[in-house]
Length: 151
Image 1 (spheres, helix red, strand yellow):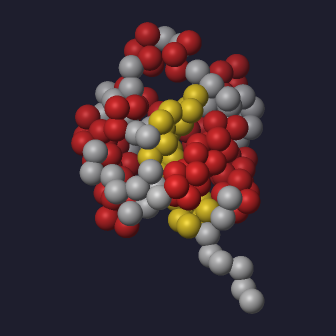
Image 2 (image 1 turned 90 degrees about the vertical axis):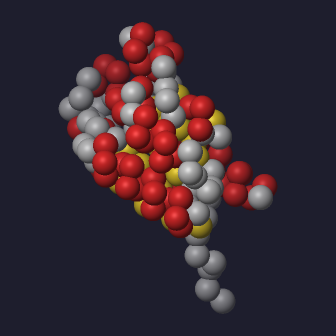
């Protein structure tokens, strides 16, 4: 008997996250984006989730992926990067969500610069996980699995 296929979840990352390992190592650590992808896929597999991990530098592409998630009833783990703080287009796309949405951040955005403390994503998400480094993503995937299991 074959093992049941996992549930698909989009793990979406916004601007500059592809530069992990090079970008402000004191804040984001020295692990790379490839390390993050591998961690999300491994954690997803343990939770019977198919983690489709993506990164873009472009707001419009992130909005298009949010539309894809809405149309496909796909849960999302989202680190929108700087777009978190001002992208009303992204917020409007996320308002149409049809499955769990967990906002995630590597650093503790509440302990950083003032502009980073405001999120336009938080009001439309099921929850937010921040400040635990890459483990924030693992916790977010666990939250998505729990939300899916409770429905």
